[in-house]
Amino acid sequence: MTKFKIVAVFLAVLLSAGHASAQQPPDEKMAVAMQLLNERTGQVIELAAEVQKLNKQLQEARAELAKAKTPPAKP
Image (cartoon, rainbow, N blue to C red):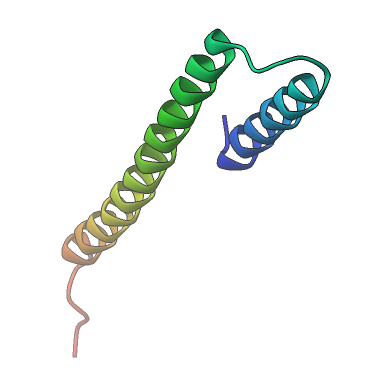
């Protein structure tokens, strides 16, 4: 799932939770669920950032490998 989809789902849940809380008193289970969702969303964002960093490192390593495999130019 892309970061944008994750954020969209997260916002949809927040909006629906806000709408539900306007209709009924706050529920302890909902509060716990929202806390868990917030924690998991933070973890997903951190992991996505780590994946991006690793992808960049992989691209750099592939470029270096390709450069090393290229035969030197003949004068």
